[in-house]
Length: 50
View (cartoon, rainbow, N blue to C red):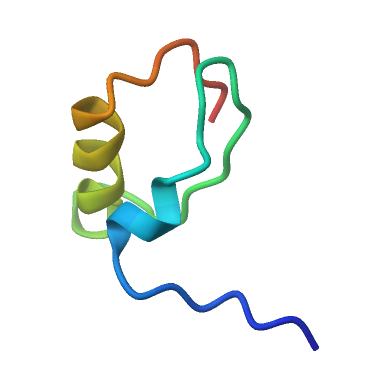
């Protein structure tokens, strides 16, 4: 089995580039991936398909 565990959100979002297609878990306001969203904004990633 491949280990997909990462240490932090920076590591998780490291390879995401402009135009990428990504999947994020969550439902409603209590489940939004706010740390992932904040990191992608910080990286200035554009044109994502989620």
